[in-house]
Length: 147
Image (cartoon, rainbow, N blue to C red; front, side, top):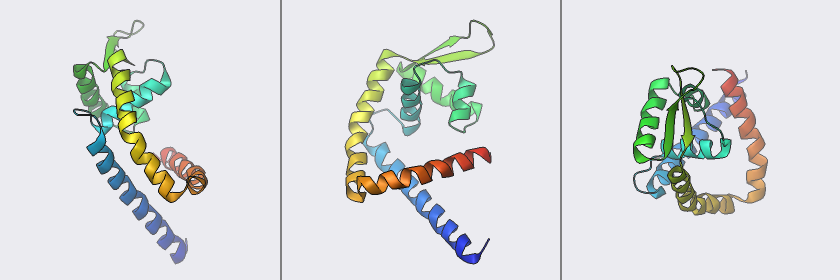
């Protein structure tokens, strides 16, 4: 790898990490009271999936330990935003689904964060964002294969 490629890579990842930190900070401030970004992420995933997931599947999806996912799911269950039940085929496992109040909480979060995200896209330009998305997706796929 040439020095210029290495410098480009370091600069790219520095920008990605900075954007990640700023986005997390800002979104955390505008989420509905009591909701953390990790809660929104799980609720959004379950809402889009439309099917139950096991805690292990969710942990893999979010690249977390099972313990970290269990902690998040416990908070979501306490809030009434997910239902956790035994797996009927394997009593050692549990299955997680989003509850009606979880859907409402997720929808409220989308309403809160959508203007923030839309403002960034408007500022950067929708065409430039469309150009960047395939590159970011490809990078995500490469990084997820390396884990």
